Length: 115
Length: 142
Image 1: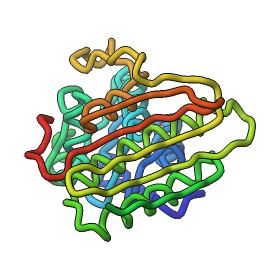
Image 2: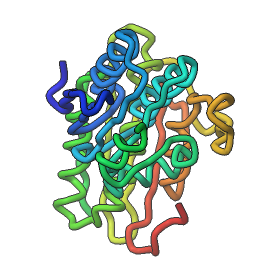
Image 3: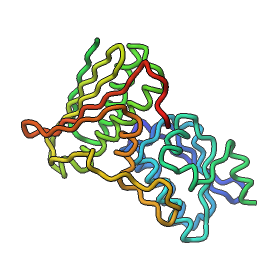
Image 4: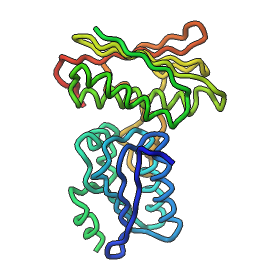
């Protein structure tokens, strides 16, 4: 749909890991949202989003992640984020999202935190 | 002082064209990456708002005027959508917990946070937002 964002996902030890690369703006974020919502609708309750390839996020990207987090909490699941680049982490901090999301420095720690 | 202009249809896929335009205008003038990121964020948030809400489904354009001076980068963003003064929007409660967290208003809050000066005018049937960011000052406090 958009050339500026790639989304893929795989399973590691029963945890769905979503990899988002590129930029999450008001256009491209919808693709990432569709993937995450698809997983939740398919029954996934343990999701890690690896953001190591994400170079830019706007409030639209945050909206997608917040909505997934709220949805999973309702279903007794959890969404955790790994590998935020410094510029993306600053946007999280500006929004106060660093206090409502669990952030991990690497994907393995995020996945293992579900064990 | 250098000036760069861009006019694009107010369609969401054009956000990437706008981001590239801002990045290259700032890069050509050696603007620091961190400052450039803040400016890209502010322009992206304003243009997203215009695309999503300003034209309410009708076709229209966004005009962006980027002036890079010694002390300031100034952006003027104009559209002919419904009159909307983003400076009147209340700030979101960024300390709210997850259950009480609302996403509305976050984009404009980012704009107010990262830019140093904002001015809104409704002029000749157009919304015109002028934003300034200091480029030779210490980083702003966020």
